[in-house]
Length: 189
Image 1: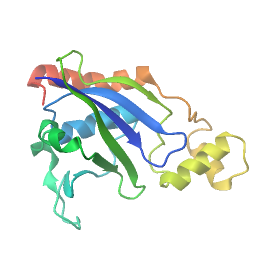
Image 2: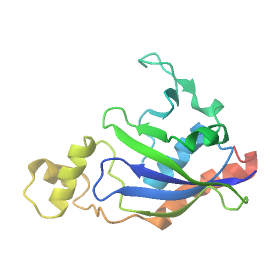
Image 3: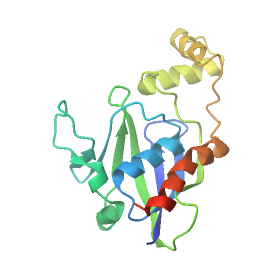
């Protein structure tokens, strides 16, 4: 099966937090969620959903305010024709509201290994549970030495260190290894 190159952008971040990655074209959306968690630096502590053309995919629960189809039953390759004129959205952590845009950069690429894998990107992903974009901005202000009480509190909760410029390709490769092994053992979906 062919591979697809995706670009994932964490919306409204300045400078933009983004990743480019290669995934199997027939990956299901639950597996894609796991890949996004690894390449962005999230810890899979919260609910998520994908949206494409008004349809939602994720892990249905009793508290959802809309119909959500099971993500593991939806495969990326079924969306590819529609994504030429649209985009896939990914929302992680409904409280903090981290919205991602997923763009298909190229599909139908020859199958490669290891896959999925990071191709490029920029900037560190915000830490979990910091209060969304306002918390991320406060944290970056504190890192820059500005007098931001909330940002200082967030920085202290991270043991005094956070580098917003630091996208860690080696750490991302490490987080992708178990996912890659799962693809080798159980096929590429």
